[in-house]
Amino acid sequence: DPNLKVDWNPITSTWTNLKDLGGNRTVVLSCLGISWFWFFGAVYFTLLPAFAKTVLGGQSSAYVLLLAVFSIGTGLGAVLCEVLSKKRLEIGLVPFGAFGMTLFGVLLYFAAPNALSEPKIVAEGISGGLTLSQLIAKSQTWWVMLWMLLMALFSGFFIVPLFALIQSRSDEKKRSRIIAANNILNSLFMVAAVGVMGVLDKLGFSIPQILLITAILNLVVAIYIFTLVPEFLMRFCCWILINVMYRVKVEGIDHLPEEGPALMVCNHVGFTDPLIIAGCIPRPTVFVMYWKIFQAPGANWLFKTARAIPIAGRNENPEMYAAAFTAISAALKAGEVVCIFPEGGLTPDGDVKEFKRGVELALEHDPVPVLPMALQGLWGSMFSRWDRHNKRLKMPRRLFARVALVVGALRPPEAAKADSLELEVKRLRGDLA
Picture 1 (tube, rainbow, N blue to C red):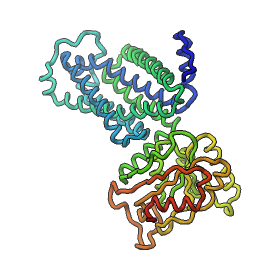
Picture 2 (picture 1 turned 180 degrees about the horizontal axis):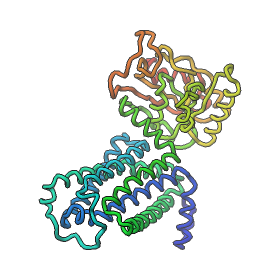
Picture 3 (picture 1 turned 90 degrees about the vertical axis):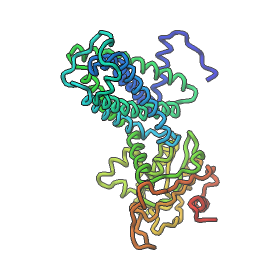
Picture 4 (picture 1 turned 180 degrees about the vertical axis):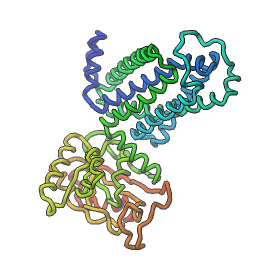
């Protein structure tokens, strides 16, 4: 921001940065998640010297060993995060990382020698005790190192997407100040961690017990954040689906604008289509879905949490039909991405059905760019309709079955007619030469 005037007063400038942070709820909660990570890390890094001496009974080399394991694990987690996210912003890894941090933190407690009777934190140095070779000869040491390595590795899954999310969702002119505000919160949480450790020590908790309490609190904090921002858990479910059931190849995703409203149209093959699309699209997406599926018992809460828009046929329920387009307009005006399946239902035979004019109606109210997409390889699976050609449904060919999402070039609203979009989706799907 070239017009920014620097405030040299550290108190008022700090307060201004914190206020700038409060403008975006998702960014605020992501910063709190990152700050919790530093609280979590501060506890472990502060207690590692005493853990090495009083729990493992090692010399200073034991502390260096644990520190190396912790650092290597975090680095590996950051690298694997890029691999698993396929170089996209994948916030679905955040719940994966949080649950892993808690699981392996709890296992670390049970792997610690004499975890139930180990004494309180001591202030002495860590000279004396077992040598590194003597320590490594003990099987318990290897279990401690394994759980610490995995806990640190999963912390990489937790922290890296949150940092990326802050950078992608923050205002470009305020981004550096938001990162500065995040650092202020990180520092406050680290100081708080030391205070909490002191209180727990005075209450008589041992080092492994303090680490166990921190691991359990990690799960509580994570669930609280995911409750406030359901997008994390939704993305996690989508990520699991497209990485366990399918191997999804994505083409042309760079056509999606990084910000601003857009209307996506896609062929409709199976019930998992929205999950696959949501797992491949890096931006939060609002889906329009048939109202009877939206109201399905047990799934209604999920669809509401995902902010899906229920729609009925114009003759079936005129009021709901009109309300759906009002909701679509509100989402587009808010700068969001909305996905419509213009066929109006699942394909009955695997072919792309005629596109209805709902897309044109939505563009009349809000002329936004349109992004055509096509799903390949899903027809005939257990989540599509009855295969009339083969007279059966079939399971995915195998785990990691290959499917594809092909994204076409962005179209201006005046060039996005139902018939031309239908032809484009067919071309993307491979129906046309």
